[in-house]
Image 1 (cartoon, helix red, strand yellow):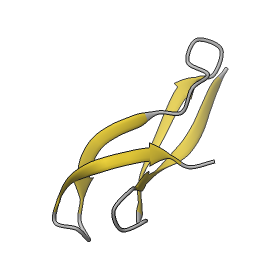
Image 2 (cartoon, one colour; image 1 turned 90 degrees about the vertical axis):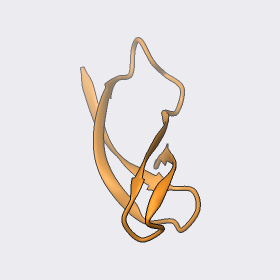
Image 3 (cartoon, one colour; image 1 turned 30 degrees about the vertical axis):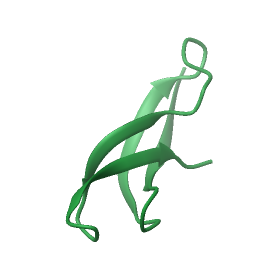
Image 4 (cartoon, helix red, strand yellow; image 1 turned 60 degrees about the horizontal axis):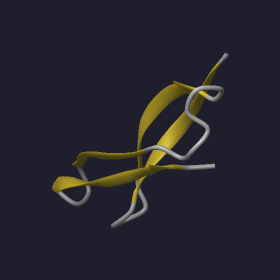
Length: 49
């Protein structure tokens, strides 16, 4: 049931993290504030299709 996807930095576009979620309970796209090594700061990361 779980679906894996990449999290992409909204500032620089770097794909930094691999995450998973249950599509049945959370159908919307995930948005998390995580650390980006290229930007050298915590930025918003969105789920990449």
